[in-house]
Image 1 (spheres, rainbow, N blue to C red):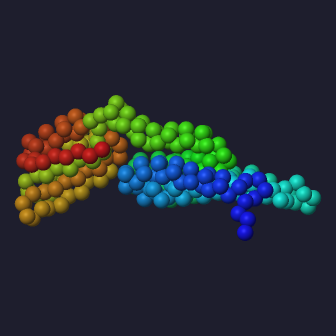
Image 2: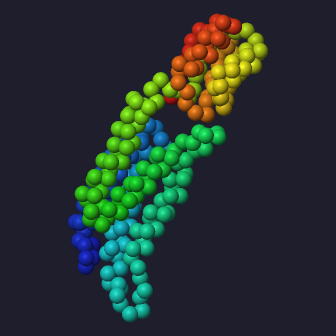
Length: 233
């Protein structure tokens, strides 16, 4: 059985698929650490699948290409990968509420890895490696820069605990946030019967500086004893 074609041998096919596996795994590990559904395995499969599609696109029709009676455009296979992988990326996007959308970055990384796979399948190793590290830097490095310089002290969720009083606290808390022009999407309330406290969680549609929220918390503190406050980005 001959595993080679007239245009590319089996060794080169193996090399290209292995390189696609490694590059897909590098980006997939970063997403896996963030505990996204589309993690290591998804990115590897996208990269390897795209690489194979490119190999087939370039070398799979050599025996009939140019022959009379065959109207074949090999580039269509690779083109369909770029558009088709969008459906996979759409599955990672979650619309939570109003302005809160999660998964766009992961969807973009899947699409990018598909193109990386096409580059590897076409033998453009250097372009694929450079792109992989650019994608990785964008996912990890730029996010650190954003947190360090642009979202310092910003949060989207605040949790706090108060001594148990009554449900009128909810209306008062909502009024105080409106007074300071801070809009929230969700306010949840529960009673902790073990320590007899009220637990609150407020989720904001966009990030607010902790200093602005602390001003509201100071006013809430005047009306009741706040035991604990926790901010989350």
